[in-house]
Image 1 (cartoon, helix red, strand yellow):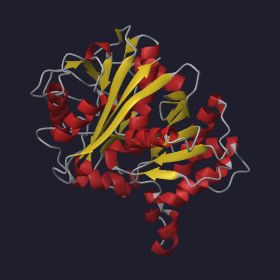
Image 2: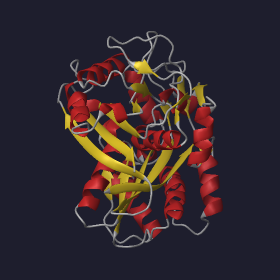
Image 3: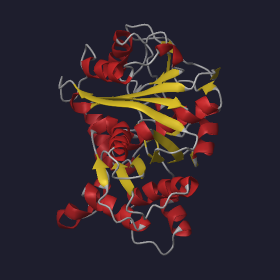
Length: 376
């Protein structure tokens, strides 16, 4: 039995899960229109940390720490708090570190020569620097699989714990935004210049965000906590950037995690909910095909934007804490249903007594993942 015993969210909305949860419950967001940032010709909507906020907080908390990039500092500011809450020994050989990110230190490419950044931007280098901070002797694992990275990392940690090789795992998900990333999404014409509207008929595209989120997982623990009941990763290889119109991979992931589990016990399905035309439609098809269209659904991209490598971890944490408080969090930005399959979209804080949920994600290259969480 694999449990989550501690967590932390560090985002522009706050430092710590409690601050973030309260902000989401109140409907607050740090999504803003950024014009001229990084010299980009087009304005973009995103939730970003204030200039120097991460560096200042890290220098104050860890003045003797090894030089770290802004991205690494952000990850450590989340991870150190989660580890402290858990009480585990992060320096133990029985503790595994798993890093989830899509772009890591790619922003360094914009300010340095290729000769300098070839190693500095390598994801394994960032992961090893984070492991050294904790004095952890193990080779850290890096999961970089587009939008599903965070959920994949949780599943990878689960598998390693189930093997008996480790007693604990620290899963850290995060990404910072940069000109490279924003211009890439702009080239896809995927960004909305207004706050995104998941599943809505008038949705225009996604917003971006930066954040770090951490879960500490433990094997065979008697401590109370959320249990990772099941996890599944499925790739339908439909298209490099477009999701399957039949939602084949997402449907298969949902079917796998629900095997032998009663859908009536589900409080909510926390979706990817990017507010792009095809992703939201695909998710609605997957949910209907899996026979889960009567289960309430929600999404948090209207609060945080798409936080990429953090998203799967961050959104899992928020949903756990919401259900701990007997609440379904709303889908900010949603108004009128704009997908072909009927969904029960949560639009306001809603009471619930159920303590199980699905977190689902999909991404480029036909990748899909889902986890089933249950409170025991």
